[in-house]
Length: 84
Length: 379
Image: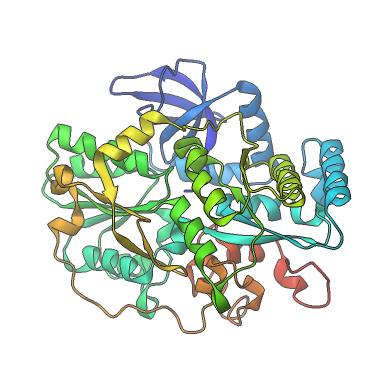
């Protein structure tokens, strides 16, 4: 639960919710803690909430590091959980 | 060597490693506490420790929320699930942590209690919507990153009049814990010359709250990003502060951390929560003004007000060294249970259960194999 993963915003929904994509896995998350997040932005996601925006370069580097360290698939598995 | 391969840019890593070795005074030892469990794992996973000169030591801190939760609060959560008939929603990391007599949420569930693992507090809200005839309690743990999501959920529940939802609040604060570690003296004191400040917590609270720690205790703090190169750059900044006799708050993670932090998240937290006068931490004991409780205005959503929790004589597993490990005073390899009766499959203490715990890091990354005879390897 401590980790945070960058993800790209695919679409905005009502009630400050958005659909993001993590390596192809789609997830509904909350944008209640960030301002001005738009479709195409990358945000850092922690327990289902975007904490802040990150640059595409930072997002790519973080995802590559997590994948190399073998922790990305575990985290995405935990996050994907039951469909929402 | 594998550890170098894991860096995106091995040239930079090697340059930083050489620079730290050049600047670290061979006549001195440097003890830096990485507060956050995420940093502990980055240090091991990417072999950062192996790129340090032998006089630069990492001391593992208490920044793992699962690890610092005292047994009493876990026993209370188990009581909510077993004796009050609620649906208890918990982050997965808590499920296997042993409480008194090694009872746990997962064992309570096996015995018939309705304990559900959730990824987000939003899932707990959904559970409350889907089960209007049941009481649903969210077992809230975590530092300043995990607190604003709980605040959002409580304001949502209030706005929707979701009367069957409540929160068992165990949210804790980073700066008072750093203060408590620096205040401890005598046999309980860890040797610390500076701190690697947490990444994500600092994106929320900003760098300003650490300033009092730096000035009151004369210890440098460098807020570090979570990637291996960030950690190495931050160590270099700490070495320079120590060598220069400085104790300042510096920010290595400027791409995400500002002095004031995430104002929206801070405002939501302040709206819903207030400081507790005291809170017990595993390892640190009772620390004043170190945790949050739900304000009166949102009291209807506070599980501690809604349910009468019984007094209990909670206790840790005897011989478990989690408390000393969380204070930075002992290493996992100095615990006699480590790797013998205590493993990730049969954890005796919280630091072995949580993926962010120091014992789990030592186990996962093989440090237990270098227990003796390899100078520096057991750091």
